[in-house]
Length: 275
Image (cartoon, rainbow, N blue to C red; front, side, top):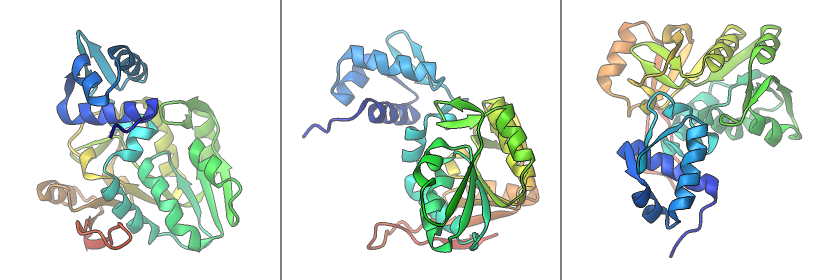
């Protein structure tokens, strides 16, 4: 049976396919998604506008410097099981009544449903979807960080957002990054890097939530050394050699076990291996 996808779902799966194969032809993609070549051309034009892919003669390749800052639909479908485990571990660090800075990352967003039992809570965020989803939720107070809207990230950035953060002080910041090489974190977009630095500076405690695919990747703009975070949460899917190198670099790393045998609810139970 052919499953009909929305254009957004198809583009997300197209990016996932390119993530695995690095390149693909128009004919291959049209056959894979059971659509016309013209439809694939339109999808690739849209993804190229978002600086996610590069169209080449007869096909497309993924832009490696931006693949970790793809649109929200793609990010929300990437490394889902691992992100859920990391999110559960982060939720355990949240206490009732906290003011929480939450960035636009898909992993940080997964923390929110897990902390509803700790209301009242204050959310400070630049994510339009978080603002929309929780603005009327009982026991949740939302502060929206305005600025310039980025349709790829579905969030707000820029000087207005940065200045707003500078006037705030929060209990904890839940953040993610685009890429990590060595013990340094990077973003492709300088505005995103500046925004995350402002979040980091405004928090009494900072937690980085990151799945293993972000490591040993490249992006253009330096964000921060990982030792700037009070805790870096990742999973045991990360190469043990990288774990050792990070610990030697004084990174406060917590490695959470991914239980590959899901429970009855289809979720996994996080277990702290080491920190």
